[in-house]
Length: 449
Ligand code: UDX
Image 1: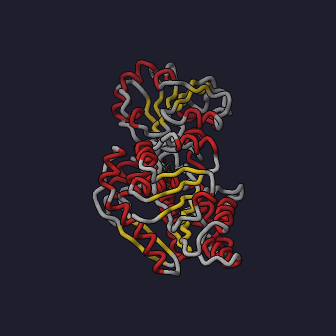
Image 2: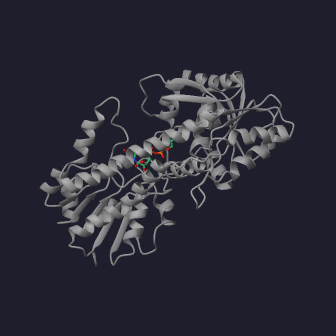
Image 3: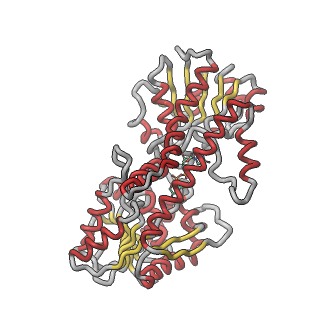
């Protein structure tokens, strides 16, 4: 495709977007200021673990379509599209910190050609696009602005982008929005070959292309994540009722989710959601709604339930030991915020480990991909191990905080011989409780009394 794209920011979204566009034959600059990240990408390697992404980066580099750089001056002037994929971390008060969003837009203005289209992929509160358009006009720039929210999940980033449910574009200029859609339509024509290259599974159905107003597109992104977070907190609330009444939350949610109006996904009760999106998108939506005079107390409840889950699980463990955890050996399996990624942002596993470290207990922990990332956030009293076996050896309690395949498929008889008579805490409700009990181990799930 004869067009040039610049992607600003090589995070999960930026690196995925840039490497896929480049692999589909589009000349794509990827601007990343962080030296070590840039070096890793130039060597054909992602700086985070994501299934299939390295071969796609390498293909982009070999074809010379992917051009990693730290320079706006090298990339932006010849680009028809500039995709802003910079981070929007949360502030201590829960609102979104938009410093990177505005500084990326400011740095772009002086280099961008008048006909360029500025595409916002970073998650921003509704109303941000108008402010950036104002910034462009103040600087006498005629660039068009299109909001193009991102829906990929870490761990399945390539699959989600190639076999999307929907691509949303929002903006006042329909022609510009259509041009952005055309990039994705081009990518869609290459998805079979890119999936082969990445060695990832392919999807089944074709997604939808949706064009909306600018404000709607901005609100769609946070609303999607808020709704999914609400499903999880709802399932976790009902899990507490199941614990109190003898019901099994997995049975409940399986049957509830079989109603097509509800659906089964994101009703898996457990230790709550973490990651770089749900926690900050929920707090960001609460905060930006308040700024617009709307008290979104439903989302406050979602956040409160989520915050309560790690200590809820710890109290269940304490009750199992008659209220006393002193001198117990506790093994934590899983430190990333979910399986399939090395990302530890707002990781429930780390939260549980750090809460437990305040007790008189001995904690060992392990993750197949996130050890160095987790080390910084974990309390220094926690011992990191190099294998699942050494982590659980001699443990009184083994907590499965993520459902990494190597954890949940690990033979129960081996757990029983390494940690005899231990209590298995299934914080993601992914194990077979009767199989655990058959091996003489105690089982604690969430909502599976
Ligand atoms: C999420 C959205 O799914 C994605 O569309 C958006 O672009 C970015 O935010 P991600 O953060 O990568 O993606 O992870 P996701 O798979 O959604 O999981 C988020 C958290 O919820 C994880 O901690 C996960 O373990 C937890 N979760 C998910 C549950 O506790 N129960 C569930 O049923 C599903």
